[in-house]
Length: 211
Image 1 (cartoon, one colour):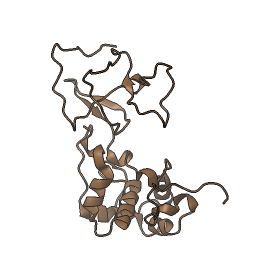
Image 2: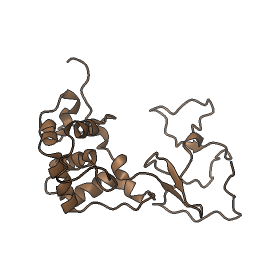
Image 3: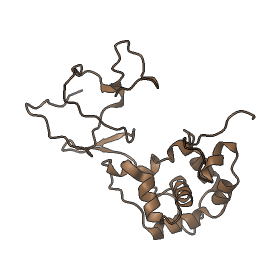
Image 4: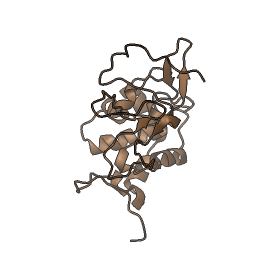
């Protein structure tokens, strides 16, 4: 596999840029080779490069998405998919895909959308947007969609993405019907914190066990 040339003068890097790194090259910098734990305050590094030393100038990147790459003929690296395939409600979902499960069970009313194209919106994404609007009173659909996408909107997707319009969001909400929203108001313990803001100052997480 060919590698990218290392120029005599590296490109100018600034905050807000997106850096793509093959997932298999992301490694732990610890001398022991073990994975980083909760008590470790360190960034991951790119394997196969020169070891980072104190006072070296380093680009620190936040992982926004892990997706398949699409490379253009001129070398541009873009991501397949769109924010609707990666956005979550963070701690409120605690690593589960409850929204996806509800959307799949509910299906879509074909009178409104077919669900064949899920670039700007999808059933699960719309459910998450509705949850955000519930937790953030006064938020409009377009605002909730932009908040839900977050930094995912900065990723150079293979096909340009933009927040869907309020009209499109309303169409998808009608296609989902009332069932998914009723499911959210009568959640099992694993989704209980979706329906209301948590009084605790710590992130909500699903309850487990029989208690």
